[in-house]
Amino acid sequence: MLKVDLNCDMGESFGAYKMGRDEEILDFITSANIACGFHAGDPATIRKTVRMAIDKNVGIGVHPGLQDLVGFGRRNMQISPQEAYDLVVYQIGAIYAFAKSEGGQIQHVKPHGALYNMAAKNSSLAMAIAEAVYKVDPSIILFGLAGSELVKAGEKIGLRTANEVFADRTYQSDGTLTPRTESQALITDRETAVKGVIRMVKEGTVASLQGIDVPIQADTICIHGDGENALDFASYISSSLREAGIEVTKIASFK
Image (cartoon, rainbow, N blue to C red; front, side):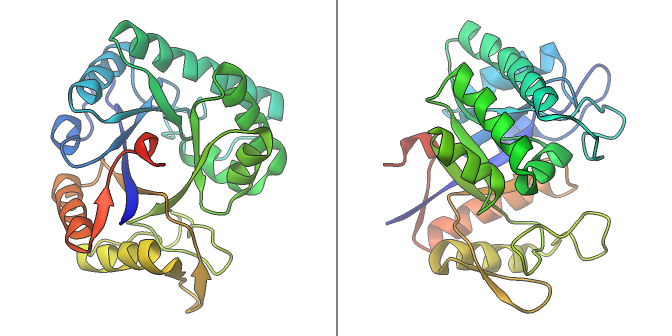
């Protein structure tokens, strides 16, 4: 049977600001990418999210981002590979401590936002991030955009990697995501999103905005937890995948 992991970004609330419906969405996903305090999140939110993930048998993931709270980590910043290495090690440390204190362990690392997109194309940044993960714990799985420089760097350094695809984003003919600044970047119709995801898992291809079918490997599917209909979408995509004969399970359980 085909298997796929279903991941979601969460733990993005901080202080008096609440974002997402994490506790409910955790019922439908298999891996959680937890914000580490740089682009979103705070210590109390990290602890609560880690605890909920453990209680619901969801894989704990580190979601390190650029230090840009106002821009939610989605604005490109000129950082060196050394800076990328340092900020990833630092943020892994935050989630690691809470996971250990709650009796859990880190399953994966998935960079957030602009850092993720930069590392998808920049081999030096990608290698710095992969090295940061490897030196902290070589058993951690590295998530990256399918076919990206980040996945290649992880494989080169000896990490287990997971090729990630997106349920609610459109693709370009080179396999990259359409920038959020463009009008057709997001897929809002859930039927369209699910149809595309099932095709990626079963056929290994995705239709680009340019009308070209692009080869793609789907190990894990990302959904976003901050959308207006995020809970409904998480439930729908989880049940639709299973109805299509695809097992939804956390990435660590893959053989």
